[in-house]
Image 1 (cartoon, one colour):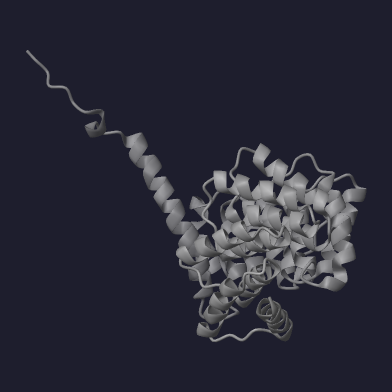
Image 2 (image 1 turned 180 degrees about the horizontal axis):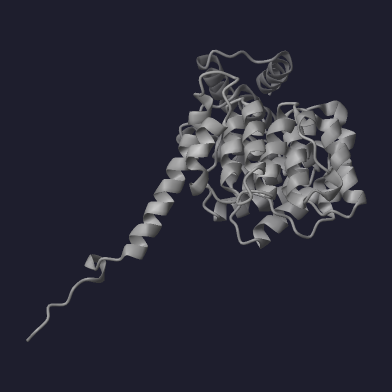
Length: 352
């Protein structure tokens, strides 16, 4: 008697169905808990009214997402109540994940005093959560103190913490001296873990502070981590070398960007055109100016001015007049210095 083969996908597998059901239930629970807590009828209504119903489904760490979400909803008191509720359940507590989430939420909302715990015994994740919360809440001085305490106690914190501090402090030019010390600490790290966006943001700050060597180090580190630089990162590198007046090295970065098949955006075209103007390279400046327009971008006034400038330097009066017409069509007016230089070129041309 012959037996027809049965596809394995059609065989009843209760273990797979059970596992799928658990994943679905967990996702639903994570989504519903913060929403149900927010809907409690009054501030006096305790979170236990919601959490008690789901107690048997919860595992260690599962409430950390709920606590963070309550923080995003602007409900730090509810986040703390959720933490307090978890403390009473041995299968959920102790757990550094929910402690870290609670600390981050309370620090962000300036309510850290509501939670008493021995921070000398705090884990790395808890200290990092406290610093993140302080940064998000604008307590930069406290966040900086916590970093220094961690360093004095030989606690090695994640490099992303330093990046968060650097990006936040750098918003205030008066605090650049603090950024420099943080950059020094970041430079000494061998275990960098930076996203493309974070790496590029730090590189931009380094350019402002003229820490060009660190820009180069970060770029090389990023490429060595087997990731492709974005057009923004390439633009930052070209701008860095341009700012350092290393024009030839900046030009080599333009060729590298071209070879990587990056699609240039408007800031990239602006930096590249400025570079070739600085090199008095009329041909390449005009080529990228044409490519900018072919790509559908509208030149900004500073781009118009740069191109007119290199045309004046090359004595190209006809080309200057063409671009001046484009400036006029764009509803813009030449600045006094450019107009004066253009008039000088016209006078020189007429006298020949």
